[in-house]
Image 1 (cartoon, helix red, strand yellow):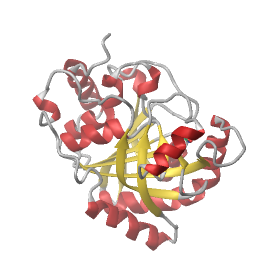
Image 2 (tube, helix red, strand yellow):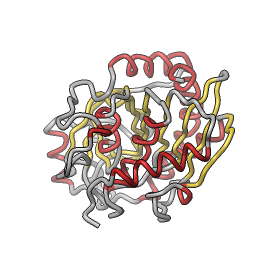
Image 3 (cartoon, protein in one colour):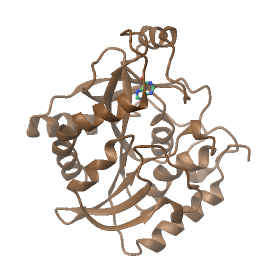
Image 4 (cartoon, rainbow, N blue to C red):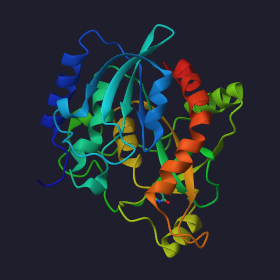
Length: 275
Ligand code: HPA
């Protein structure tokens, strides 16, 4: 396996999902990242399919990632909910990472929403940060390799990777339900190590408000394929070196659990306005 996108696997995966949801007509897709999957409880789920039944996902799981795709409904409109994602650091290659964005577009979605857990370099644990822009610091790009026109242009524009109108929708949704949000730049590293304090200092110096290990590759695919994108980070910890404490995945999961009340309030409002 060379890690590059296999367009045939993506197409087969899209066909698998269409076969599970033959009559589905979703307009928006939501990726629930680390710890966010609990938010599925607030939706009216019509049907679910396990990632294990979709070509290309493999079977491994990270704690806090459910590994299921739901077809859900709000106010009579359908949307997709991806409960968990595959990460570059898992070593499965880019195909598995690209699947949610590719399938969402193939199913007819024009809007793509991603969520994640991130370390704060300017914000504090518990803050919900609308991503205004990103820095791809993974050292590689999901679209490297042969050009597949099905994924968009050879050199996709990223000027408005996070759609300004959708960001405004996120802000007004948050205001409507009384949940405070901040806005900032997300920097993605490859992981799976957390950053060193020196790397956090670098991230902050070059303009990052949060650091994480996901989201950027799928946002690149979604933009290249012509979807409008929005994303929110839940700041789960101060990034490395900002306090004397070492970082743990447990801390990440616990902070997300504590933020879940706000997420449960906010997500349905976002979905109502997106779907
Ligand atoms: N760094 C990278 N990824 C993360 C972090 C972090 O501090 N917290 C949650 N995901």
